[in-house]
Image (cartoon, rainbow, N blue to C red; front, side, top):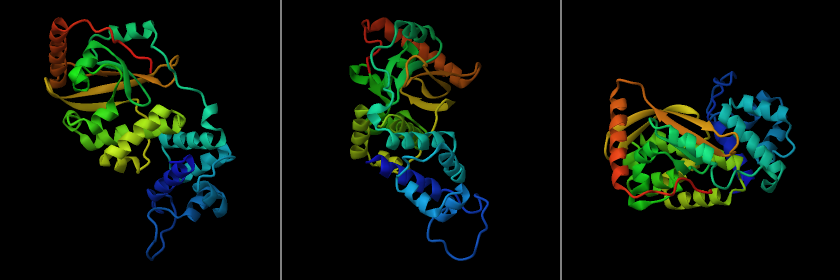
Length: 296
C-alpha cells in the first residue's frame, strides 16, 4: 500500500471517530451520511479551506507546514502517538524513504548486554521496531519460553508468534488488547521506517496469513508503548501480570529495552519467583547458549 493510501485511510479513520458534539460543533437534526465529522467540518476546525483539506486527506501532505499539520491534528483530537504518526507520514511523502535516518543494524554493544544480564530479578529483553527480540536475559527467556520452543534462536518475532503460532492465543490471555497493542506498534513503526523491507515483508506475511491481523491493521491505530501492565498465561507458572517499562536506547536508534517487574507480597511476585527457580533449573540442565544477541 502506498503512503498516500495510508494517509487517506488514517485521516479518514480519525475523522470517523469524532462526533460533532465532541468537536464542540452544533448538532443539527437529520441523518448524517458519514460517521464522525464531515471533511468540511474538519477544514473549518483546522482553519483551512475545504478544497485544501480534501487534498490533504487524499494523501497530498507534501508541502504542508507544521502549523497546518498541528491544526489538523488539533481538529481531529489526535493523541501523542497519532500526531507523531501524522508527521511521519508527512515526512515520508515530502522526502523519499531512502533519505530518512536508517535504523541501527549490527550487534548490540557488550556494555548493553552486560546491563541486560545484570537485571537478574526482572525479565528483560531488547527489541527493534519490528518486534524482533534481539537479546534477552535469563528470566526474560524463561518468561517468553513459548517463543523459544523447539530450539528457536534469536531473533524471535513477537508478532509472528502471536498471530501465526498455535500457542500464541494461549500465551496472551487478554487477546483483544494484546492484538491491538501489537498491530498498533507495527503500524507506528511503519510510519517511522517506511523503507524497512524486513518490516514490509513481515506485515505482508501477517496480512496474508492472519485474518485477525488484517482486520486490526485496517483500523490504522497507532500507539506509544512506554509503560503499563501486561498479562501472560505461562505454561509453567500459570497466569501472571507484570508491570513493564520500555526505554529506547539513545545510542541504538530503533531499539528498545523492555523490563518487567511486580510489587512485593503479591501472587504475581510469587509467580515471578517460581519462574526464576524454573529458569535456574533449566539453565543447570541446558548446554551453554552462545546466541546472546543478533545483528538485526
